Image 1 (cartoon, rainbow, N blue to C red):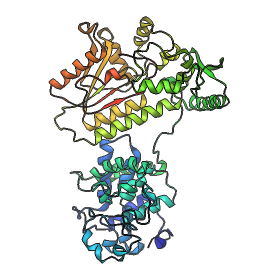
Image 2: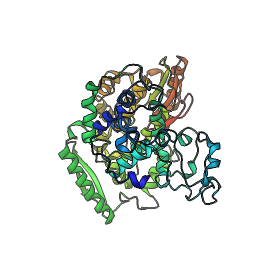
Image 3: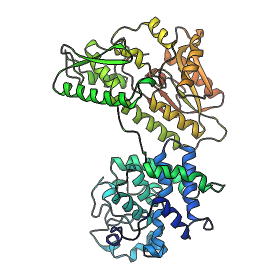
Image 4: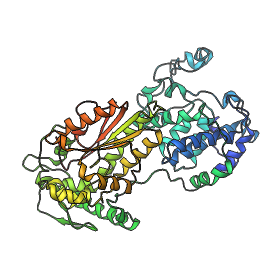
Length: 506
């Protein structure tokens, strides 16, 4: 069957033309069989678009995931329903009991074949689902079409297309022993997708002509995810020219580091970053100096094993500067915020607006990196006067991955609570700064009042979170760059520690 259809010689058409052609299909397994297939595709895609507006690749996946049902049409061989729709499962290993009507597999010769009827069969542990042969159906056909046509959709999209009918996996929890690490990450997206794919259709019909231009634009360009490039630290530095320049610059710096030549970021003005050679210290790779590995030091800081420190070790200034200005800081922030998003989306968010997410501000939602780049990346003693002067400029940029999480939480109906160590006299500038960079709404913004002078950050933030819960909120998540943001009482269902090796607040 696969050998026949992998030839890709049935018809040539655009994705939108295929969507329209699918209207000739009546899927008897669909609860709303009186609606055209285009309506089903768009209801799935538009429902996802409403709740996850930034994930355009997921919108497009919602549109195309069922296009393999064209196998039911005469032009594509007119296969019977049982060969096109229904639950899918692996072949070449034992049939799991979570498969629908699994008892009838006893009539299948593979059931009694010792090469195929064991837990792993012809596969090995954690081999990856890409290496597993699935039962034939519209899922696998569309997956093959997308793969063979070199789609630029991300791996998670292909995983969704191929496995959205693989209910023993994403509903029954079976076959996890065949999954690799990437499969586990992609499964999180599939479980989000399946909330919209089958029976959670919209109550109103979609205006096809109204939404068509949007989906045609996705089909044309398929902008799946921003590439990992050096991220600008201030709005005026976000031009393509600057990004290309910085990418080239960091490539040069990395080469110097690999050659053993340490470099130190020096700021003479925020509009430019200059790199100068320095006397050998620790190097950005964290080579030992007097028993100190800067990479290990940063790890100890982020895991709260190194505490009560006042400044970054001078020998690690270049390492911390390279980390904060390079791409790894952004990647780390992205990973943590992505996990926070998966956590939130896995919950049943209350309709009464009582679910809240607590954010810290400095180095959690707003970045003070422009200030610290001019002040040794935390390697020089903290100067409260200078830092407060910076705060009152109101020019702190947003941490981009945190802003993405914020927007997704708002779209899920989660209430936003900011609890910051900033003081009440900084309320106006903090509110203006948050709104200027995209944090447009929140339920409450808590700043430190005079009654908490002398209290630790843990005591202050625990007390404020307690007030939030006493007001009837359920704290479903808590994000901060300091462990003092996350420890204590009333911490919420889960906490998420963002990277910050530049300073410590106990």
